[in-house]
Length: 271
Image 1 (tube, one colour):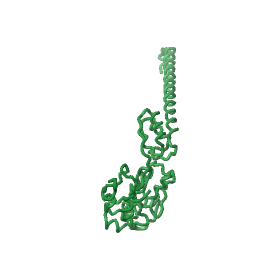
Image 2 (tube, helix red, strand yellow):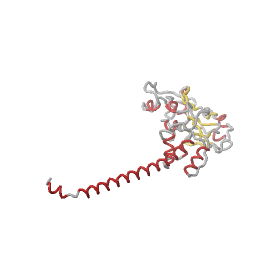
Image 3 (cartoon, rainbow, N blue to C red):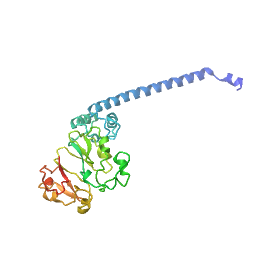
Image 4 (cartoon, helix red, strand yellow):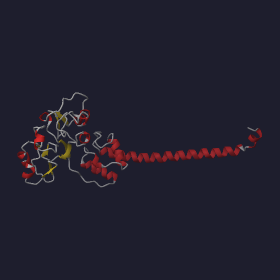
């Protein structure tokens, strides 16, 4: 570079400009840090308050990694309170107050497996392979001749954070006293036969096949044959037949158990 050109540069002014730019940069960085600090504290405090009222099970039933993740999603308006089953209504009401939203209490529910087949239903092959219903289901939809029945490989049992599910005689059973309605089993059952029903329920339908009569009887000793006797004899008209299966309206059901007595296949179970 030309020496004369360097000499012509007013270095004092260059230094002044550089100093001003550096000072402005420091001010902007400081402002960003201050704003982010106050915002994060506000958010963190809100998340912490919400988390205090959650069940704390970290079950993941809400779809988030744990209660803290769910609390953050609630604080950001990205999740609904109804997504958490284990948290009691009174706690949800407190969270709703923190969020400044309305809350309507929901009826306590728990999971039931809509199948009672197990060893009473026929297999189409003997399964030998990786554990879990998903793995078994890759082979012709599972070993059961009834394509709507529980495979009994225990995916729901292994996922349940409350140890509320056990596979007995080839079919999954839920312990009502232990179930917290987190919904993990419902979401992960490959046959989609686990349902949430009111805890006050006295009966449930332990079958999911839409098949009728001879077809059902040829593959399962206890499967529903769609006869409709339960619906015809219910004194409260709480049962309707949908796709050859009885559907119980628990808002009408009084738990008289007439359906249990009338079911010729003993598919409707007492709770």
